[in-house]
Structure formats: C-alpha cells, structure tokens
Image (cartoon, rainbow, N blue to C red; front, side):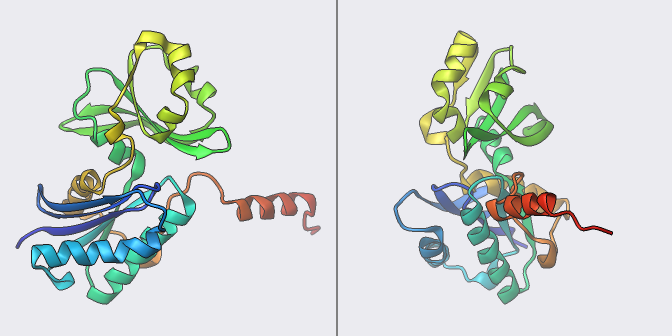
Length: 238
C-alpha cells in the first residue's frame, strides 16, 4: 500500500502543507503572506491533491505539527487535521516544530540549538544531537529568555529558527565565532521535514486519538495565566 501522507504545519506565520509518499516528497506549498492560515490552508491542501491526482480517501494518514509556536496558528492546524480525519476516518500523527527544524540541518558537526520566537523576550527552545539519521532531543523542550539559555552553551553550536534570527546579535555577542547559523531559508519549520518525522511516527504506530489531539503550547495561554492568577488571589476556603 502506498504511504501517502498529508502533513500540515501552522506553528509559525510561514505555514506549509506537504504531500509525500513514503520518503518521497510529491509536493509542498509554503506561504508567508498577510492572509491567515485558516484562509489558505484548505486551498493549499486541495491544490496539492489535485496536482497529484489524489483524493483524501487515497491518503494513509495525516501529519500535523503540534507546537510549540503560535497559539492561534496551532489551533487552526490541529482543528483542520481533526476535521479531515473525521471526514475520512484516517489516523493522525503529531510532531514537534522544534524537532522539525532540527531535521532541516542534517547531521551537523556541532551541537544544534533550535529557537522559535515566543515573544515576551522568550523563545521556545530545544537542544538536539543526531542518532541513526534523526535528531534526538537532549533534555526537554522549554520556553525561556535567550540570556538564560546562552548561559548553558559554551561549545560550538549551530542555531536555527526564528528565535535565533531575532536574537542573533545577542548570540554572537555571547559566543562569538562559536556560534553558527543555518541559512535564512531554513529558519521556519517545513511541512516536508515534518512529514519525515510523521512517517516515522506512523510506522511506529504512534497515532493519536482525535479526542486527545491538542496543540502543545509549552507556555500557558494568556487566558489561562489570568485564571491562574485569579485563583491564587482568591483561594477556595475549605
């Protein structure tokens, strides 16, 4: 059976959709435009399937980047995949945006630090090494100020992601020639890279039940922060 996989990424403003068959990329649409993901996502899906002569029913599964990243973008991506999966009965696998970016720098000679701009003077970050052809997370994904992250880095390191571009001058000031940067074209997650991670997850039977499919924010949303603060200010007396 052909392993047709449709993978969506909406974790950053540069959203993308990829159609693949096994390890072969059939097509990818990458757009960073003023329009929203909700406006351009389904048209991109329809275009890819039409050009490939496929229908949704021909797909084996859907892949989706779960985060971290833009809260609104992630909700759109997850909701879209849920709808497609419900309509077709096909399974869903989810992958990390940071892991996706790490895969876009194949087999680096140095340590790899992935940062996505989280605003509020913080970045979503993960450190990766390479094992058997895939990047492996060292520690865990976190959200933290760039200064704090750089305190833990002393060796030569390759930086990738929108967060490394936003704080490039700080990184260079702290690490000098030990800091290396991925090309600008790789600074946003690509659905084509996410598709490889999704394929591996699918083959390992790491599908996600739709009722459990949710974005991975890492950081609380503003509404949740406010509720937490109010609860702290007004503890329930028992």
